[in-house]
Amino acid sequence: MIKARASMEHLFRVFTAPEGRESKLAQIERHLSSNLADFLSQHVVSKATSLEDIEQHFAEFTVPEEPQFVSDHAESLLKNLVANSVNTYSPQFIGHMTSALPYFHLPLAKLLVGLNQNLVKIETSKAFTPLERQVLGMMHQMVYQQDADFYQAHLHSANYSLGAFCSGGTIANISALWVARNQCLAPQGNFKGIAKAGLHSALQHYGYKDLVILTSRRGHYSLSKAADILGLGRDNLITLDCPEHTLDPALALAEGQRLQAQGIKVLAIVGIAGTTETGHIDPLDELADVASQLGCHFHVDAAWGGAMLFSNTHRGLLKGIERADSVTLDAHKQMYVPMGAGMVLFKDANASNAVRHHAEYILRAGSKDLGASTLEGSRNGMAMMLYASLHIFGRQGYQLLIDNSLEKAHHFADMINQHDDFELTTEPTLCLLTYRLFPAAVLVYVEQHPQQAAKVNQLLNDLTVAVQKRQREAGKSFVSRTRLEIQRHAGQKLTVFRVVLANPLTTSEHLQDILQEQLTIAKQTHAWQALLNYCELQQSQ
Ligand SMILES: *Cc1c(COP(=O)(O)O)cnc(C)c1O
Image 1 (cartoon, rainbow, N blue to C red):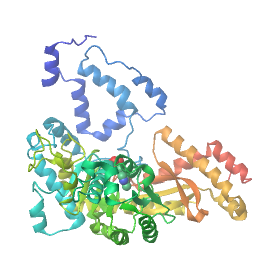
Image 2 (image 1 turned 90 degrees about the horizontal axis):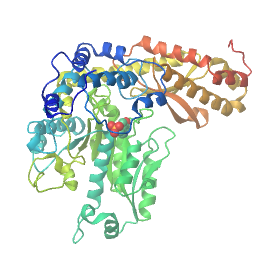
Image 3 (image 1 turned 135 degrees about the horizontal axis):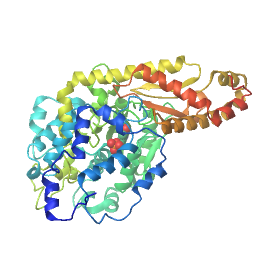
Image 4 (image 1 turned 45 degrees about the vertical axis):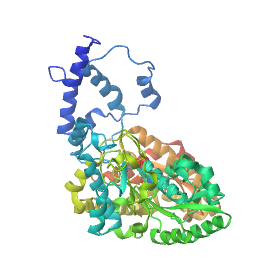
């Protein structure tokens, strides 16, 4: 093999053009562009390779001394990385919120890298800045439906922003609560505000003993990170019980009043529009009332469920979202945009000025640089991907996709309900549902021996874990698993399969196959045998 040399000549070629003949990388690219599904099924090998084995390919811990030809490197990427990746494009990969993407994002991604714009400032992005502001405005309009005057006044104004684009829901949640915090502990008289003076002085100035955020147990863990980063502390994210899977407004009000009576200020209530585990939507309208009664910020985490706004059939599920002070959306979930596309939107176009920051060389006062009020600094033009999707699908296209996912989830729920050996544990809200194996004969046993129910549930938990792991390792299909308290089972915490039916390519046959595969796998496990033995049943059952 001819080795590359560390010469400026070689490096110059790396920056400008590929090696003369069609390089390996160019072949890969051609295959990717002509048929992504085929490329993935050929190169992403679904085999049961353990993570430990894969780690052997990534065991080297010194930087390679000598350069490598791009083609040689491409070979090793294919072999070690691509082959051991996860085929999220597959219609049988229904365990997580990451799914197939429309093909046009592939060439757009190339354009994005080719242009390599930096959205932190106009000087390195130019047209991308107004584009991003427009996309934020469109999403703002989806949520808040303000009139034309409002958008004309704020869309491109240097003094306002309708929101911020960021890498994902986590940063969006942090950004929203950062703004809430700085507004809550704003400058007043001689007090310079928390942004300058810090939390300790701010609490003293305002006479608060502490600062807390209220949400339900189902709140995404990014809220806990936010509480930590913002100086509140993770224990000050108060997660309230939600036996019915959604935050009870009366409970939130009572808890908020109890805390405020002790001098502890409620910074914000966070309502969830589409919980990560089960897809449930909090009663947003009532929570908006609670927030106004407590005099606190109302944030809605709609990272998952926000896309419902596109559907005239289902947008009513999010009633009350338009009363939120801030809203988190993730375009890389149900909007089918590649990862790295989160947004926070603010009802009040002035809100983000609470975190505005200026520097001498960029982000000068009065400039339209987006970086002045975003948490992140250098940022690529991901907004272009959403911009393209919004145009190529249109609201109607998105509505079709969303409605289709929901119908599929209901269809799958019916399939599970009709199957003797499965139990639906949470009904679909949005396109998420949870279920588990619960063989018919075991059900009969439990009905006859109700006092054994808790023990049987434990054995069923073991079975769910065993099946989920084997199914993942077999690599043909994938569902995830989680633990939930289920009322019907005396509030016992059960391990359940979790599926997200967002991939438009998933068909009824795929779903049928998945149930069949799970049953087949189950019968090969020790957990199955242990369950049957405990219930004094024969394997033939
Ligand atoms: C996915 C998700 C997040 C986090 O978003 P990332 O893009 O993963 O950072 C936050 N909240 C909810 C409800 C989510 O579904």
